[in-house]
Image (cartoon, rainbow, N blue to C red; front, top):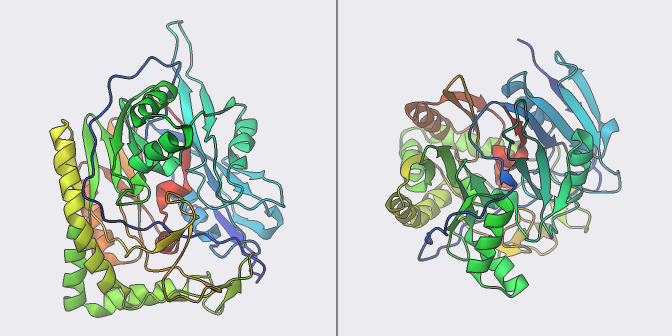
Length: 444
């Protein structure tokens, strides 16, 4: 079998830390959609539709970051179809060796300045817009990049202009702040998390209705705000997936909690092995017991063993909120399908309430140590495409069979051809998954 493989050097150097998003309980989850969109010259590229033809990922080396994702990126490259060209952002190119490359014209390394630090999540600092085609024969749809007005996480904001220069696209600065993980779209609607609307309203001293209208103008789609503030899940791409044609997939933590609880009673060794693997492979090499970040804080492998019980309890607590959201979305005319998930307990944010980079800690944690906990296992943070009218999902796999299997079965039941992408557990411990790691730039 042909496979693309990139290997990274291992070294214990200063690291860039990535931390996760948590769940916050709140009484209401849905607001009424805004009015029809104002005409726009461009529209947000949807998360569902034609064949994926170009994406961007970022790769952190072991010399620069705790979360080494070279193996994960290799899995992503091998899981996506050979037609999909892939741009890999790196700021430490010498740390990587391409060990196997059957598609020499498919993968391109794009070097960022070596003095800049960035995360493995290119989804967040910018959006991809596509110009509306004209009525002229042979006219083509062109893309453009819209950068968040402000984006404080690491140096991620520089990704946008580097990519725009590589593919020769216009790069524009938005008048609004956003994180790409808090927006998902089909070809008619963009769903925006309530945190994003509220933050812009406060920052710009405008009404939330005005902010919704401005998003409508810039993105060219009808806006549906998924709330309340603070959101029950930090980024809505962790819980909501537009499927097109008025259909949505929505996470179901109650279902996931039941599955894992049953497995703990029936085959506890399977769950414990998953927990142990999360701890052992946290640094990419079980021999590494601790690292030191750029602020001098100690990073140790998290205590995951035994965490499934806490995740079950918390998933049950948040499940009624997601059930209510499903009812609200159905009342708005959407057909809602549920997908199992298991969410880890919340941790207190130290930084942006939206950002996956906002560092977190427990009340009794040593302030000289960084705390990362049990992974949030979601099967909504996916990539979608359609080939000859056959819908396809690229589905994250975490190594917990009872959930991985149930998610595959559910997506197949929805009519999707399922292509799995392994190795997402460690990324999920930092609060991200597959869509977070892969930004789709073009579709047929």
